[in-house]
Length: 229
Ligand SMILES: [Cu+2]
Image (cartoon, rainbow, N blue to C red; front, side, top):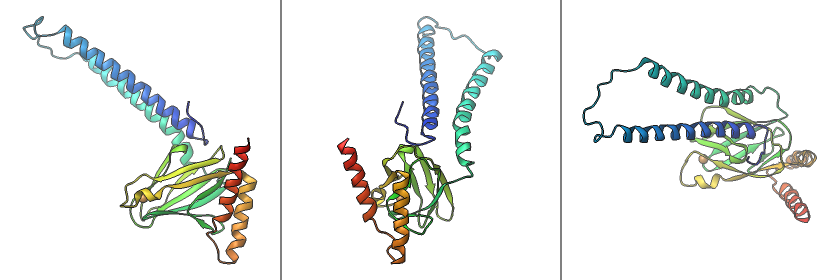
């Protein structure tokens, strides 16, 4: 239904759709019943109210059916969430540090950037922490949001399935420059990524560990290639 960008984006969408459909059906059912009874039992037709002392069958029904519906929503959302949280094997790990008002993305070889570069088709773990206040690591394209809490280590797992440039936002209002925490999440072809990360490692020997030139260059190459197509 929506563009799929990662391994779990489709399951989040279907859970969302499932909850929305049930909610809309319930809304219609309740509204229609309400209007029907308001008209049927209006004061002009029923001047004397009928005393009513409960009906076990109806009460059981309106407890059991909504409980089943709500539990099914929970189950539907939880099973893939649990699957995601219980992932144990990762191809790459990154440490994501939020601070007022920026993100630091650190790679396994020690490189630090403020734009995130990752390879497509790999299972990636992002260890998320905050240096100061609450922030939230939010990537709408992957349907992923995880709070960055000072003093706590959180994580998310993402398996991007499409190359491209996606937005990272902070989804927890963290002060005047909250807006400035918009960064880019760039999913590259695997060989391109590994060539880049290797070049970062050799740069580091010259104590330059935040070189942004190379990826920007390959990114613009990628864009012009796409443009040619
Ligand atoms: Cu923030």
